Length: 160
Image (cartoon, rainbow, N blue to C red; front, side):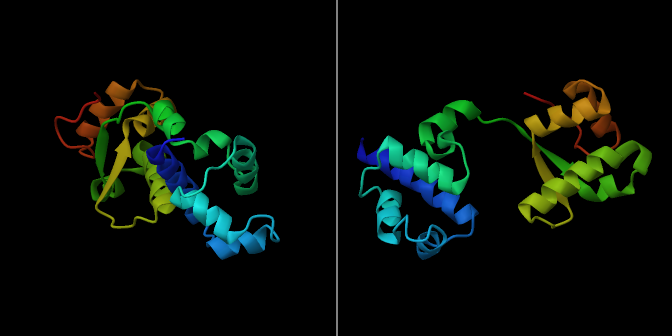
């Protein structure tokens, strides 16, 4: 395993641990000593090679698919970066519920997930827009046009 890959793998392990709110010592406690803080820390720093079997066990401990721990697999699965669209939350709040209700609920869920309550603008991915288009029974392009007409998206917004 190359040093760069070991560091990238370690960064993924650290990110998953952090998402779960665990310290290295917290892992040792939660696993009742199965996973030693010093060992997991050395995996995260890329100082120690992790076997496939250990990686699978660690993924099971974290409750995530093994692929989530592999940096190259995650990048390939995601594909190229997608365009982001900026929703005007103030304008969204002014629209009647029967029109904008699904979008408002979706935006609120994203805000809650991100812990982002600035109340002005919410950036969504093109994938989010495709999901919303299904809810609105429109194509993503038609939904963009509708959101521009509602003045929720700036004029000239489009999917790439």
